[in-house]
Image (cartoon, rainbow, N blue to C red; front, side, top):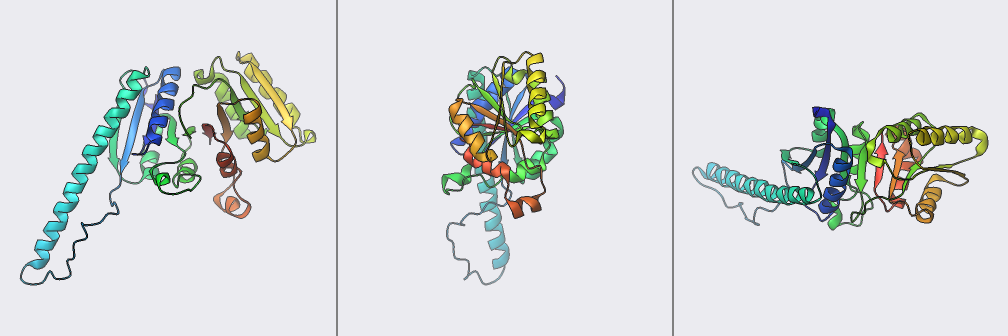
Length: 288
């Protein structure tokens, strides 16, 4: 098996990790690729030092004693974090094995999530991560704070997970006729992940822009590859069209291009990707 062909599931110690593990197992078994779980440990965790008041630490050699004490606290905390992470990863590993994955791997790394994933990307076919994570346990934010940064930094497909696992039965692609969408159609046609599943290719916009011709190309490409394909060109903004079609067609997984404009343009005009992610309550495969 070539090293560039693994599925990498990024997990943190939240209840969303189980959902990520279940979808990662589904992807790995259908694509017949090895699965690895990656858990990032923060190098500089924000934590209390037991509310100890060191303001009175004066006298001979007091500074060295204090530094030794703080160093030991850090060492103990780091050891506990590693051990907790090891138990957490082993549980996910057993969960994946029960779902049919052969010998899933686990790894813990110190560092920043985005930097670590960039380092790993050369060996990864697809990343899988929760759309919300540990921070979402205590905040109502719609998207995890790392999702957009991760997606912008990587070039491989990224499957973002929302909730409990449900084996997809209906898959939909948000298609705009651009180069990224065409690449996505070709990826679906060549990838074993969606074999046997109906593919719905949905476009929003005006027919006069050549979208109908592009949609016909997508349908022909997918049908030639053996997929049952349904297409539609609908009026309306992408967020509303996609959200309504997901509901009407009982879609279980959405595929779309992501962040095709610069961060500055997104800041000025808003990001369609973020809008669609926030509107969608189903797993979404993001293409870069």
